[in-house]
Image (tube, rainbow, N blue to C red; front, side):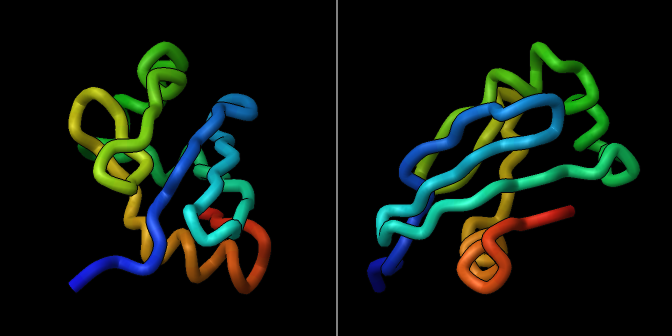
Length: 85
C-alpha cells in the first residue's frame, strides 16, 4: 500500500513552530505547546535540538528519533490550516 501523502519539507519558523508542506500541496503550520514537552519529547525544549528537525521517511523527525505522526498532522492542516499539539 502506498501512502498518498507525506511530508515533503519542514522549516523552523520559531521556537516550537514549524512550517510543513506535503507532497499533495497541503501546507500549514505546526505549533507545539511547551506543556506537551514531557517524557522523551522534553529534549525538544533545547532550541538546538528542536532546530535540527528534518524529514525522514515522509515524517517530521529529529535526530534523536522523535517524530510527529504525518497522518494526524495532514488531516489537521487540511481542515484548519494548522496543527497544534
